[in-house]
Length: 440
Image (cartoon, rainbow, N blue to C red):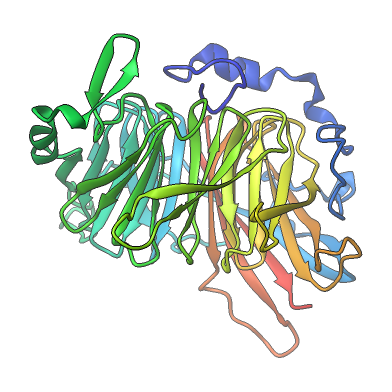
């Protein structure tokens, strides 16, 4: 199944699918939801109606969180794409975006001016093009860009962000398409290398046989994980692009998300409503084995995000809830703390920066949540608050990324941290937002 429905897996995101995402009459509801009613709501603050952010003004708005004020405002809109923006990724000073037409764009992530807001329309020429939707991206250093595609492929591009005399970046060079031809040929004539993918049909295990939905790199960038709607995830060595492992039937339905922790755990989220935790075995058998299965969502899991220390896992689903999981050290690996509620439609994307969680939804909004330690009476030691709600997109928010605002200048009487948030939408626009969060 696909990332937008708990019942069907679309082969492409059709106009009808977009219409269905927009038509829910609950869009205007500001109240907490009854979804995941069996879970306690993590303490959160929903700002009053007049504090919701509309991008048609540069007025900075303020919400209260833990007695301190968080300020946020709309910055700019990037109109580089002519089709739905499916993926965003930050690396260094650049932001990369991929769309449903297979175009990849790159721009300086910090070249905007916060006031007045404007649209950046100059020199928007793709640095790479292919014939299939770009569903996910991962970047290794300043050299390699990995892209996941609807046509079952993973592509590897050589990054070149130098400027030509006309101001345009030169096209990126396609280095490899995964699996490589060498991998395919080595497996083709080996009987043990073929697996059943459909009734009466076999394929070599190194190949994905459905859309590749998500990518993740290990911290040292030596391994690339790819997850697919074919219910498998694969592990690739980035030095020679060899496929080292394929975990077959990792889920009972399409895999929509994969994230990696620094201590070697892999988390996959699926249309089967489950999150599964995997760990690579030691010794000679370095294959992944299943550690735990996390089951609390009532519909397809679309997005996963991990805190920087790997202690907290966030999962977003079609049930409109973001479930918070924390390490418990037991056999279950993760324990449910509660659910973050406020979105009125499916959660489509999540991103973490510092102690902030950003969530994007089919309700066309972005919410910013903050995790604070030591303020909770729930026993987990953490409490959560909603600092801001960004409104302005005309279609579902499909992808998110965020980073520290390197242009922010701290002062002695202004103790806090400034962040930039980038949201990609099915309306083909990328919006840039700023939020300043006080130190508590």
